[in-house]
Image (cartoon, rainbow, N blue to C red; front, top):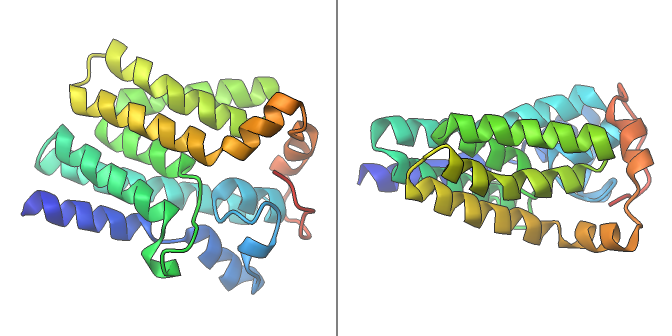
Length: 210
């Protein structure tokens, strides 16, 4: 019963749409009508700058980290994996948005791995930073880092639930970025625009971008 309760708590935590809430509170706008229409930290940062983007990224990471960490400490890795997965599902289909489309789970996935397998999460973050600052495509950095989690979990000797979770999480992240992947393959993903807006303090609403 404890595991079930932790999984439910993970879903509720993951369902908190911080990007949507923060933009509503501070800008009285709907982030779903801006930029790519995504409620995640990348789109919030792209459109409104770091003062709303950074808190969104931190809170989206925390809502994966806390349930996964608590479940891992109280029960074990399998419970941590289930709670982290529930948080990711909540981010994708938030309870507080009537199960409508949420975000692409990148920050929440990273937080879940930092909670259940800190070394895997930390190395995955390092991969994201390396790919992003080298190639300047947030979508590509997200997919590469997610896929790399499987290898890091296996190489670092984490138990099978963590490696299986890494494989499923990687598949989910890539699936949710399939439109970005098609644009990357066609050479149409706009990296220069993403890079210029990454450090903006605030921003007028950006033109729609991937």
